[in-house]
Length: 390
Image: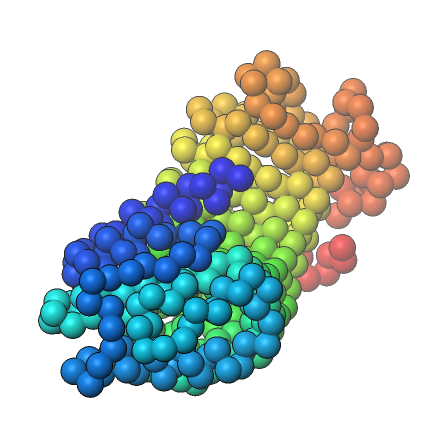
């Protein structure tokens, strides 16, 4: 998927920059080399032994042994070599010189992606205070994240996706001062989405496919993220106008199936760097804001499966980089100019199940009239008419 590829490229670049500036070049070389690894190989180092002179590796030994004891399924034997004091030789554990003293080794990264391990995260993991990346994608870890993880003040990347973590949105995220990349997708986190999350200086936020239930916080535009994926949660409410504050950073915004309603705010058109906008499978009403015609970098626009109406504006169809435009399963009544023949521009499109005259696979007159007889004025009711029932 183009979104994932672009994210990996962006995240790799920022990760290298961060470690060069903040964790020393040696951390950068180790972590960047193994960035988003899908395998778990150990990294030997000429001085990777633990002794009384290196309390950091001693602490790591305590933490990793505690973790191994509460792993109850390891089908690929990933942690079978987690024995003895030489933690830098353990599979998935990456060591590097401590930034403040390059003569001292410390554990800089953990990458257990796709290991299918089942177990918990112990409090002792908080002893790994020099950890810069923690990648646990595609395992069977479960339970609630321990508060001790707030000790990981160097942590730059946290990827806990595709696991079985539960509980409220993890508060430890807000206490990690160096965090830039957050991936919590495909877990069982529930409850409110904390507004404090958007006060953090994050580059990417993936929280899709959880059980989060709350309105999108009004300060959502305060963060500096370039990619936000909220999809498949129950966030409710309207997309706030403060989204405009993302203008200098936002490149990809995915709000698929989040139960948002009201009108798509005019301020979406201020996100001049936006390349992907997907608000499909929601309860959006009203017209397409003409401000979207100013998104010159936009490549993918998906408005499908909402209750939007009015015209599909010419300016949107003429966007210079648009390659995929979906607006099916709405109540649009007209396609302006070239919008009626997007195939001629080489644009992949879907205009089914609207109210477009002389187009195949449209809604019946009865279906169209039921909605179009109750138009929503987005200038008077930007969050939708409270008397309008969908």
